[in-house]
Image (cartoon, rainbow, N blue to C red; front, side, top):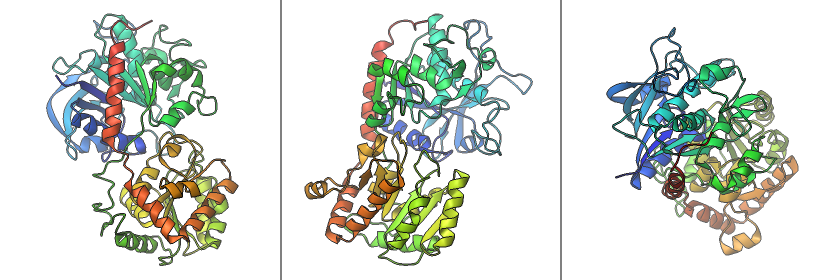
Amino acid sequence: MSLRVLYACSEVFPLLKTGGLADVSAGLPPALAAQGADVRLLLPAFPSIVAGVAPEGPSLLVPGGDTVGLPHGVGPRPDTTNGPTPWLRRGRIEASGLPVWLLHAPGLYDRPGNPYQDASGKPWPDAAEQFAWLGWAAALLGTGLDSGWVPDVVHGHDWHTGLAFAYLNRLVAAGHRRPASVFTVHNLAYQGVFGPHVRERLGLPDALFHLHGLEFHGQVSFMKAGLQFADAITTVSPTYAREITGEEQGCGLDGVLRERRDRLHGILNGVDDAVWDPANDALVQPGYSADDQRGKAAAKARLQQRLGLRTDPDALLFCVVSRLTEQKGLHLLPGVVDELVRRGGQLAVLGAGDPLIEQALQHAAQRHPGAVGLHIGYDEGLAHTVIAGSDVILVPSRFEPCGLTQLYGLRYGTLPLVRAVGGLVDTVTDSRLENIDDGSASGFVFHELSEAALLSAIRRAFALRRREADWRAVQRHAMSLRFDWARAASDTLKVYALARSDATGTASA
């Protein structure tokens, strides 16, 4: 019988994407299925997700935590003033064919705009309830809510699913079936922390609210719940797995992660070749390869025209496709733009975020018409155009769990210029002379989080570009690298096996 995996997350490409989590949720489940797993996604019924799912079969009620037969005081209480008890509806994502459970909950998901923030950019006031219900549904499915399909593994992603593991702890302690459980941290900085007043309505009893539970400085941490109660923890690169056990990048949870170091695994993300392939990308035609760069030259000309840059095939074109935040190191960018342009370079920026960074880049575009192009916002099609048409992609992050844009850059022959943190250092090899000589160089790597260090790496990119043969050799090697989901799926299945070996008794109190 196939290994049954319940894959719980809050977004999936192409239906809903605010970051790399959506790309992972689109890439990893099919790769697991290709290796024999029976995977079903559990997703909140946000409008854009519902629109892309074809319903199948009858719905299934999700009983609240006050239901007879469930442990007293555990689980969220339905707000019947807004409508009926939450329910699950089976379906299939039309674009990919992936089977899903959609969680419908009156008043929590069916509303316009960002799934996590209101129009003013503040978290929705009922965010705790939104994702407590997602965790509760995952826990109930894990213990056999649907008798026709009972998962062997519950795999939750980021803080949105953290309570699933706390709820499972209490359900199993009360005698319910125990599945194996795996929790993946995509970004430890986002933790889902709420005041202690949410405990009663979310059904979080004293047995969960303590130092070795989900209590975090007197508050409730969804992220900590996942870290404490899952059988295994994964994160999205080997280096990030090491970094988060230290104070600098542990975000206050490094002590928990050190205690559970033996359960922590770093598995590098992959790239979906069906979406990111320069030879066959429908958004980048004519396509190109490492040995035939004519399509890349055409993509560069299109990008220059699209963003109002001078049409100059020889200008070294740098790009950014990112949230414009300090976490991404992009507070450094305005301070190096003038020198980048003085050296004959161009800059294309696609992203949105910190208003001060946006404003500084807008001023740079005004100072350097034809050399700096800026598109505030996010556009998936334009992202392909920018990455394909650029020569270097900048990822100078303060911290970076894995990073996907540098992987897209490698695939498209757009050499990544990255800071040596997290998945960036795991995937990009600096173009030092010895690395160029042995054929391992694939980009540019710097260490110190400073304008001077970033500018030094930019200068090295200009220097390499003047050495045509070396540039082409590095570019060919970069394009030959493969970070595929098959490898990530194989590593994930090994973690599932370890977690299942632990799921042999009842959860500890």
